[in-house]
Image (cartoon, rainbow, N blue to C red; front, side):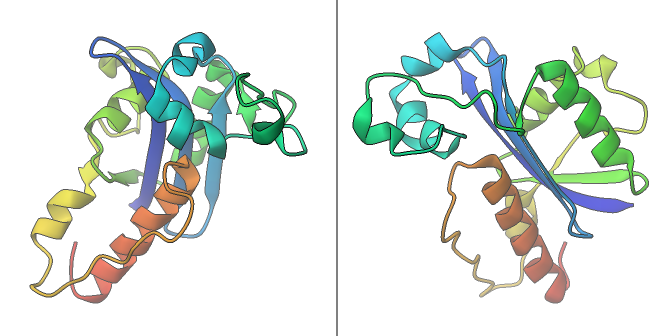
Length: 180
């Protein structure tokens, strides 16, 4: 079984959860990152927290986009990580099953798992081989030895790939002390 850490950035309104980006890191070092070309941009623009914390980490055209036009959404659709949702679903499927059965891990991962599952539709539509649950780092940290200190994430907070890398780092440190 291959361990994978992943994270998603998403828009949620209490009724729906919409993928913005996804980052996945395999314990073997492979990485995947994609930004949803089909994200609901108009709704995201109205969400100040996303505009302040997630949007700045998404691909932008070259140059200082924020200082020149802070009132507009400037998004580089030509960046190779920006993909249609269907393509992301195919690539995530292939990535997660490339090294045998996956064991999925994330931090505060309840909504992330829903966003992941929705790449293929309903939860029961998950492709064969993909687990119907994700292990939560917070549960592993509850079982960590007393005195275990979670390393801080120095950069990239709320960037899906940087967050996934951080989860993998914490999992590796937990392994060194005998958990998870």
